[in-house]
Amino acid sequence: MDIVGVLVRAKPPHITAVKAAFETIAGLEIHAETSEGQMVITLDESNGHPADTIGDINGIEGVLSAAMVYQYSEEGEESL
Image (cartoon, rainbow, N blue to C red):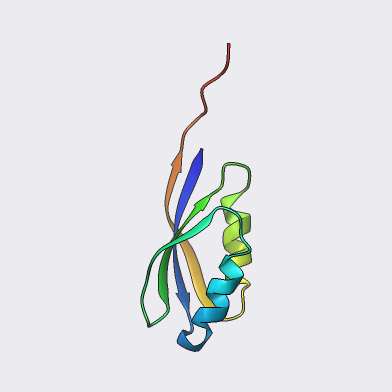
C-alpha cells in the first residue's frame, strides 16, 4: 500500500476542468478544496509511481503546482 498526499493549486477559472481531469486518474480522491483553487488530494499509488502521477497532474491545463506533502508506505502481508 502506498498513499500519497498532494497539495494542488489551480487557476480559479479552471477548477471545473481540473477536477474533470482528476476523474481520469485512478486512485485520486479530492478531500478538500477552496474557491481560490487550492485542493488537498490523495493518490493510491499501490501499483504506480507517485512522481509520475504528480508530473501528470502538473501537466493538466490550469494547474499551477502539485506537490507531494505526505507519503505512507506499507508492505503487504505475505501469503503462506
